[in-house]
Picture (cartoon, rainbow, N blue to C red):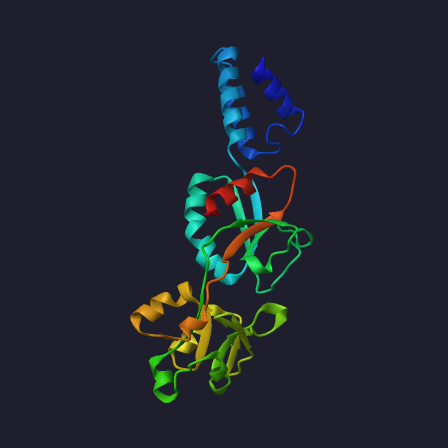
Amino acid sequence: MLHLALLNQFLHGTGDVLDGDVGVHAVLIQQIDGCQSQSLQHRGDNLTNQIVGLRERPTGRVRLLVTPLSATMVLAPKLVPLARRFPDIVLEVTTTQEGRTELVAAGFDAGIHLGESIQRDMVAVRVSRDHRLAVVGSPEYFASHPKPNSPHDLPSHRCINLRGGSAGPYRWEFGKNGEAVVVDVSGPLVVDDADLMIRAAIDGLGLTFSFEEYVAPQIASGALVRVLEDWCPPFAGYFLYYPSRRQQPAALAALIETLRL
């Protein structure tokens, strides 16, 4: 009978029935204790149904490597829906500013990064729309500095830059009408924290370069003023990526389902 086969698989550690799962142990103990008061057939059928239900529910831990901005913009809004729908999944998140990391060697199951930074041998799933960058400064800053008309004007400005891990400060990239311009900016502050970077720009320390979506509230409120908008074309946004496997873990599949556009 099916319920006896399931019980036998579990007790003998075949791996087919959630080996070591505390929830299954609890079900077994409750059902065995109750066998004295009800028929073995009835209790066995109930046990079968509960074990099958547990097998069909994704469980386990997913180790995820993400950039700080993708954690804020992509992952954070989906944490509660993920937990409510899949309560037995544990998401272990590590943030990094590094452009590329060997996921498997570093012990991660998946990562979230911009499409241009993902290695070609990885499976990639889009988890955000296309993005644009925005150059912004405060009204106070522009009260004493002229607005730049092109990226070529930026070397004469005080700029607040973001450090991209071991790659060093970010080189500001622009494009317009087929012309690509890369500028090595300079200024009083280089950070690895986007919130600190935006705070410094609001306070008038200099210009900074961030995701359009990330600074949209400050632009809308007037705390920051956008410049060079026509030099900031859209580019591929964030992707969840992971090594190709024959059999994808159920917990990772559930995360992909939750984040996928």
